[in-house]
Image 1 (tube, helix red, strand yellow):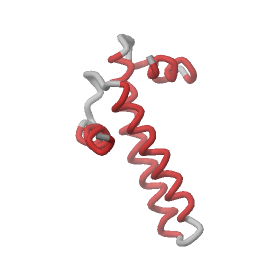
Image 2: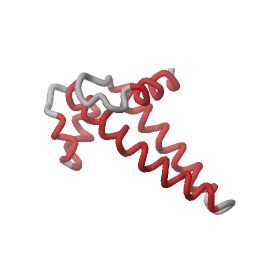
Image 3: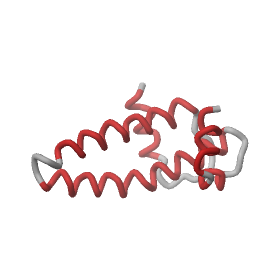
Image 4: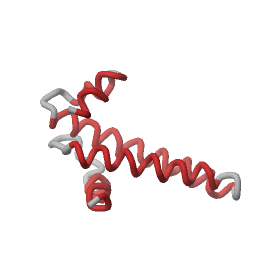
Length: 94
């Protein structure tokens, strides 16, 4: 189930309209945290992992914006609420 949620976000990377359910949003967030931590730890092994970490961060920036905006739409708010730092986390949870 987690893989399906993450793959759904990757498939809809350029879709800033529509809705994303709470589970999809948080599973993608969890996936990013875990992969980011693993890549961060592996940077001490080789410099290639540092480059992979930067590429992963840049790619997931666009994905995170898309799923965050869709999550705001699912809560009944404008996608612009993603720019409000703490309030958007409160809305994403509801």
